[in-house]
Image 1: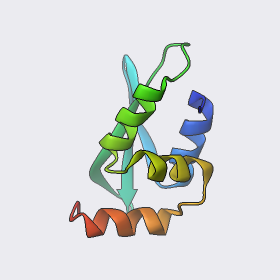
Image 2: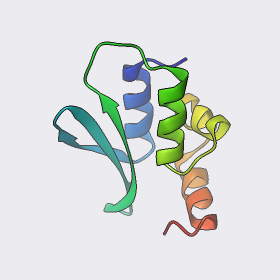
Image 3: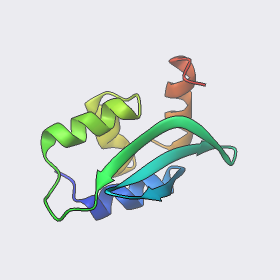
Length: 91
């Protein structure tokens, strides 16, 4: 499973920006420097991320679990991520 730091770095690399630091850290996906409706959150707590939480994050960014794993581990490029979202008519 992934740790929070690994997910944070991967999201930032793929076009997500940290926009909110309340109880949780919100990451919003930016396309062409414009914020989109695609976002997810990571808790500021110290607990490791459970499989259920990672699955929830995948749903929040409109991906299947295996696609989210690929997004974090880098086989899924930013361009491929955008293509998936466009095919789903997210934007």
